[in-house]
Length: 471
Image (tube, helix red, strand yellow):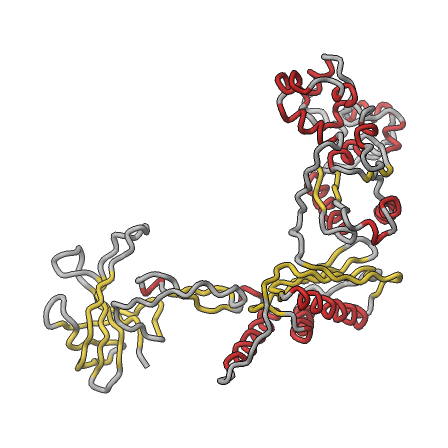
């Protein structure tokens, strides 16, 4: 019955009456006619697990997904904040059980030992150094090995992790691979590898927990202001400033809202950071909904850089740079980071590619040298260049006169040419050659002209364009 509907997951009540995953729906209904079922939705399950993982950030920033129905939390250095390992485990379970979840939680010295015990229905806190004794009675499949490996070990008479641990490692590795011994050592607590968290670890964190959830905007803003002051002191003690900040608001019902701001320069000024978050909150299309209230507000520095005290120069340019950076930060917070742009010079001789638009909040790249052997570039350039009619004295010489926008211009001075060919490493490397000229008409106006193509040396008739205007 390959096309039959089967049970993917079951509740504790269904397991108590003899149902199991993999059983066909027809057989299950034959046993329990009033069985309540729902379609399996893996995408919705994954999204639900992600939301639970977000909520678990309230205890530790080191949270990793474990399969489709598990989480691993690295609580090293966090347990004293919650009264110890046993008390912290109880708080985590009580919080998640209030949301209707059935779970097993184990605190152990390695992630693999905790995972094996929890997935076999165990719970509690493993004493330090007792992982091997606690996991010894567990079945082999608790090591999360491939099915063929579990079958081979079972046929060899190795039913439990204790049986496997009592055998020499060399024959096991020769038959089943080194991965078996690696998983065994980590599950027994003999080897430890840290988890890879789903979110990058912040540089520093400040948070406020509330015995009673807060919901008023004034209270939320006041708590955020206190956290900004705390982070400013931390960054000052470290000689650093933040480039990216994230405020996380944990609701009592498990939902988490996050708001991030970035700065054009490293900053730890509480006034400017408070203004940025205020602008960001005002610009939200979906207002910050407190629901039943926030019981935890956290502020994290996602990216930090060294920041020395600024010394104001005699010409006042340091103050001007700070004001420009503050303006960029405010505009980016209100309009969006990708809508506040600046020009960035590129290391290329091609005028069409000499500059590009990048977010103004990005760190400035290394300065690109300007071409020293070419003509000066105008500040105002046309994109695309505008066609003109030009008359030259010789085929490849400068223009004597040209017509642009129905106006005839007599050339009195010309400088050039600056010959530019397409960059050979690009797809359009066979594009025609361009000769650039800086010309001045009889009224004193200066133009940047170029001719595309060379007479009798490149296919097609040459054409003239105006690419920019000089002030």
